[in-house]
Image (cartoon, rainbow, N blue to C red):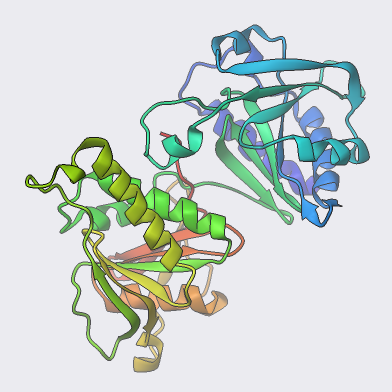
Length: 371
């Protein structure tokens, strides 16, 4: 299938640039085998079971591979009789495959491909992803493909996504948007928060916000008192980021971490309300349901550019081609020097933008790194 060639090329490219040592059992199968696998996965992804689409992972490491012996919290089970790897059989099996804790293992050594077993593990990777924990149990770090929805696949190493296929389009993820980019630089400027605390909140908010599937956006500004004719904050709700208070042990150690996580979950919930959540650079809450009036105030159309993952600049996309939520975010950053906007779409895509050198720089397909 020509439409998935780019997806496979991105998978190989990103995999080859991984920084960890690759063992023999971790290598990707050939592209023709991967293409055959993807065809089956795409057909299966469009089938519903009791009104729901399944989400699951397939891997190319046999359950008896020596590599898996290092994962003491993972178990490998072999089917007594291999299962034919075709859409109908996979569709019936998929509801038993929890994408957060197991892989369906494929034998790709001969044709036809067979599903030969299940590798499953007790994982705490969501807490690692959102920086609630610095260590824990992850899915075995092996190549796999995640079926995330109808016509949607992600090329992964363990639970970390390298590339995504969606309705005929393929792209890789920006995992450094909040650590090494113009957005990251702007978030640090004027903030007293450590990078660790900032990332803990932002990753958690985005992670939870995407789970709601509603879409939403966040404005982060260097000051609270914006001009009243620029925005309308429907629900003003001032709240301070949990800070260390020597007189209160409730903020110390684990208890304070829980406060930060709860605060981030609260902010994520607010993103489900129409309008933007407004935060300061110290991630203090100003309010939510924020409407921007910059489009009415001025007919000016800001200059925008998209920054590709390799650092190249794409100015081919016009301001008018973007949706209302995106345009309002770009205009807001254009009118408010030092502002950052984070846009979460209903389809799961995340953008982050700010103003730099007179134009709005936009990082598309922002992904959360597994730290």
